[in-house]
Amino acid sequence: MIEWWQTLLWCLFTLIVGGIVGFFVARYVFKKQIEKNPPVNEKMLRAMFMQMGRKPSEAQIKAVMNSMKNSK
Image (cartoon, rainbow, N blue to C red):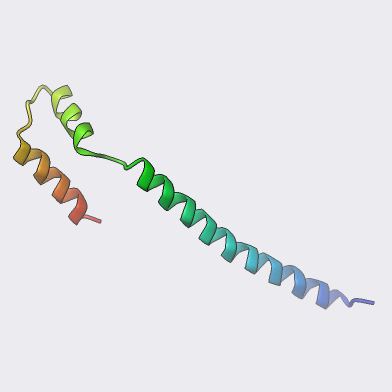
């Protein structure tokens, strides 16, 4: 017959393993979604500048993209 502490240890073990596996699966899925749908690209920046009533130059777009990449 299984003692209560053995049952408790098995429950804790499965919770820890499940948490670790869940973390890595969630991280993998999140990375795939970010690669597939990047948060902001140059086309979106141009649209945002145009909505603000400004015609952005290529240098401005590149500067904003570089600042976003460097802030990571």
